[in-house]
Amino acid sequence: MKSYTLRVTCASTRGIVAAISGFLADAQCNITDSAQFDDVETGRFFMRVSFRSEGEATLESLRADIAPVAERLKMEVAISDDAVKKKVLIMVSRFGHCLNDLLYRWRIGALPIDIVGVISNHHEYQKVVVNHDIPFHMIRVTPENKAEAEARQMEIIDQTGTELVVLARYMQVLSDRMCQQMSGRIINIHHSFLPSFKGANPYKQAYERGVKLIGATSHYVTADLDEGPIIEQDTVRVTHAQSAGDYVSLGRDVEAQVLARAVHAHIHGRVFLNAAKTVVFPASPGSYASERMG
Image 1 (tube, rainbow, N blue to C red):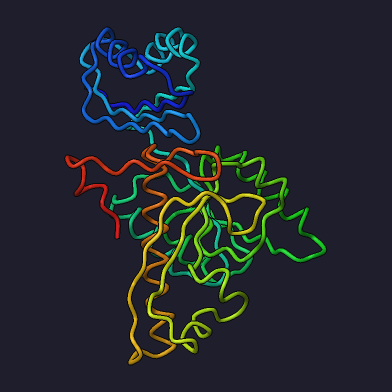
Image 2 (cartoon, one colour):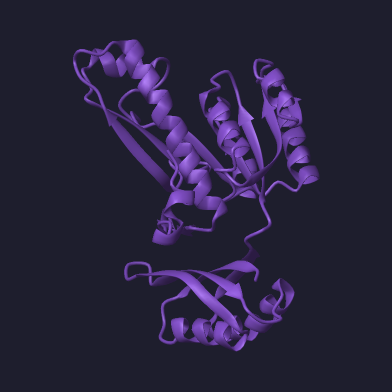
């Protein structure tokens, strides 16, 4: 039996759940997990269904058969085969903790993705990436060549069929054009000290101010720097007895964990854009062990 994931977004109205359930029953499919959310503020309805085909249904037939239902209820519908891994491109600069964490989780199967390449504006992690049999692309970025460099990045994204770009501490600001082209398909990570501690050494600034919580935020990238829809966040408590170096070390740990959880939620279709926010459905109890990250 093949497993699939169905995602639905539409205006809130009666009969959506019944229509989806009826469609799957008629297609001889068995629902294994279902989550839904009706946002009364935006008037939008979101639903994610995991199901198994117990008959002759294929991905193509399922997509064709649900089209009339989607048209009748004006739904945006996507059905994906759970066995097909998402193609992911990672971008990194000189901080490698998030890259190394993603590579480890990918290598042990905890992050089921197809890493199609790594782009960096420095050489530091070339050997690490190549040793994983992953293509490495060094694209230096300067104020003078920024447009040319970004064009090369987009060329790689197109050539590899990249479905998701992960900024694993990539320390370059993407252009508005790239953000718009890749809307909902770029995930970033940063510390959660913004807007209080900006610029260089935010953890040192936090240490000097006696901060008691260190956090990280992972979000979709938009033209508004570090203000895209939030996917995942977490914190770790610190005390007066810890040093500025401890702050940095703990901060890197929480950044890596939060980014991995955000990527995991995205590739499993658990994240829905909802205006300036997101709807993030939790992993089902039955798959908690395999989906728990961090």
